[in-house]
Image (cartoon, rainbow, N blue to C red; front, side, top):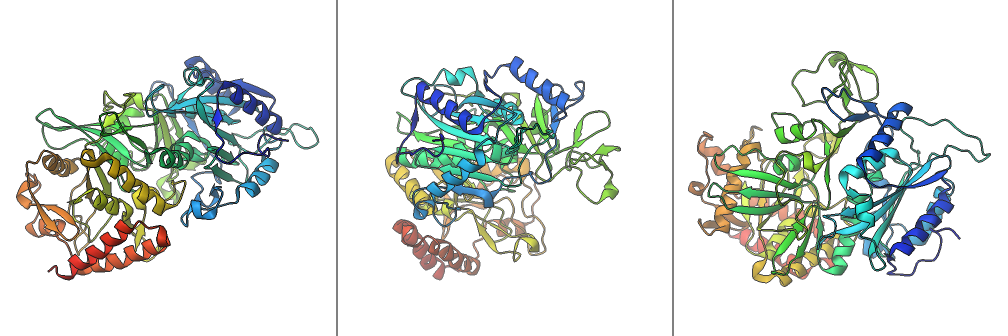
Amino acid sequence: MSALSAPVAPGMVFQGREALEDWVDGIAALTRPDAVVWCDGSEAEAELLATRMVSDGSLIRLNPALRPNSYLARSDEGDVARLEDRTFICSRTAEDAGPTNNWRDPDAMRFELTERFAGAMRGRTMYVLPFSMGPVGGAISRVGVQLTDSPYAVLSMRLMTRMGEVALAEIDGFTQWVPAVHSVGMPLVDGDGNRVPDVAWPSNPVKIIAHFPETREIWSYGSGYGGNALLAKKCFALRIASVMARDEGWLAEHMLLIKLTSPAGRAYHVAAAFPSACGKTNFAMMRPKRPGWRVETLGDDIAWLRQGPDGRLRAINPEAGFFGVAPGTGVSTNPAAMATVAGDTIFTNVALTPDGDVWWEGMSKTPPEGLIDWRGEPWSPASGTPAAHPNARFTVAAERCPVLADDWDSPDGVPIDAIVFGGRRAHNVPLVTEAADWADGVFLGATIASEQTAAAEGPVGELRFDPFAMLPFLGYDMADHWAHWLRIGERLGAKAPRVFRVNWFRKGDDGHWLWPGFGDNIRVLDWIVARLEHEVDAVASPIGLLPYRHDLDLAGLELPDADVRELLTVDAAGWRHECDEIARLFARFGDRVPRVLARRLHQLRWRLGSYA
C-alpha cells in the first residue's frame, strides 16, 4: 500500500525523525525517482544545482557585473500563477471547508493523487527539503519537510525558508512536522521504460493543489510555479497554518509586518492586511516623506501571531524571503525593493536585456531596446504584449533588504501595537478609521472589500469582499475564522492591539485621487501613533472613530479643502447600501456568523439611520 493511500487516522500528525524517514521512503516507493537527495541548504549545494540548471537550459545566468549571483527562469505559458480553481481543502466535511473554498472528499482525493503520483518522478531526483517557518527554534516557529522533483523549487525554498540541516536538526523524536509533497508531473521515463527528453520548465496540464487539514498534509501536482510549488508559502504558512492556529489558539494571517519609529525615537510594530493590488509591499517598504520617521520591514506577506508570556500579541514573519510581483516595482515606487533585488535573486518571467540584465514594466518609463520577452521572443513596444508577464516574480532572501528591521528574526516575535486593515476603495471608506473595540475591529476585518475597477472583472464599482485578505488562503470556514478572532480578543483583553482601517485609494467625483499615497501614507501612521499614545482625540461616527482635520499632518500637500472633507466624510446613503452588501456576505455563511458581528451590522444600520 502506498504512503498516500495508507489509512490515516483522524487527527493524526507526523512526528519525529523515524516517521520522517519512513515517510520519505514511502513517497519514493510511490513516485520512483532515480535518486533521493537530502538537501543541506548550503551555498555550495545551491551553486552546484544552479550551474546544472544553467547547463541544461532551465535557468539563465544574468550578467554578474550587473546582477551578481542572479538567474532568470521562464515558465511554461500554461503555468504562470496560483490556481485557485485547482486548489482544494480536503477536510472531513464540506461544512468545515466552508462556502469560499473548493472542497473535495479526502478519500476521493487520496485515490486520485495516488494514481497521479505513481511513478511521477521516474527519471528525476527527489529532493528532501527540511525547513523551518520562523526563526529556527523560535517560540512561534514550526517545521515542515517538502519533497520535490523541481530544482527550481529547491533553489527558491532555500531563499524563502530556513532550509536544510539547521531545520532537520530540529526534528527529534517528539517534533511534529508538516509533510508536503510536490511533483511537476512530468516523468522522464515512460510506461515502457524509455527515456523521454526534458524541457526547460516541466509541468503537466493536470494540476492539483490539495490540503488535508486534519493531518496537516499538502500535495501539489503538475505545476512548478510559485505558491503551487513552494509549499511552505501559501499552502503551509496560511492554509494549513490557519487550521493549526485555530486548533491551538493563535493566528496565521495574510499580513505584512513593519517596525515604525517616530521622530521621538519610540518604536511601534504594526501588522496590516490588504487584498491583492492594494499596495501591501509598498507599505511594507515605505519611504516616509515626513522628517524623523522611519519604516523598517519585518515581512511583506504573512504573519503568525500568538499571545506571549507578557499577555501581548506577538508576531513573526514565518518566511525568510520575498516572493514579489516585479511589474510595477521601480525606484520611484519602491526603492527598497529595487535595492533588494540588485543581486542574489531568482527572477521568473521577466524580460531579458541585451547586456544580460532584467527588465519589466514599471522599472523605467522607457524600455531598453533589444529586449527578449518572458516567452523568449524578441520584443519591442510595437509588439502589443507585455515584455514581462503581469505576474512575473522575484525571489530573494529577506536579509538583502536595506530596510530590514533588526528584530525581524526575533525568536520570540515582536509585540504588536496596532493592526491595520485596508482595501482599494474609490468611494465610501474614509482615509483612516479606528475601531471602537476589538469586536468592532473584527467586523472591519471581516468586511474588507475592494471595488471592481474594470468591466472585465464585473460591474464597475461592485464590492469584492476579501475578509481579512484571506479569501484564497484560509484552510477552513471563513465565519469560523471570525469567531476565532473574537476568542483571541477575549484572551488578550486590555492588552489587545488597537485596530484601524485605512484607504489610500479614495477618488473624487471626477476620478482624481484625493490622497497622494506612497511615502505620504506616513501621515496616517502618524495619527495612528498619536492615538496609541492618547495624544489626540477622535470624532465618533457611525462607522468608527475619525481624525479631526487639525490632527492630521497635511503640511506641504496643498490638498484642496473639498478633498480633505471628502477624505474624512461618512456618506450615510452609501453606507446604508454597503450594509446591504455586508448582509449578503454574511448570508453566505448562515448561522456560523458570530452573533456579535450580526449585532454590529444591525447597530451600524441603526446609527446610520439618524446620521446626517
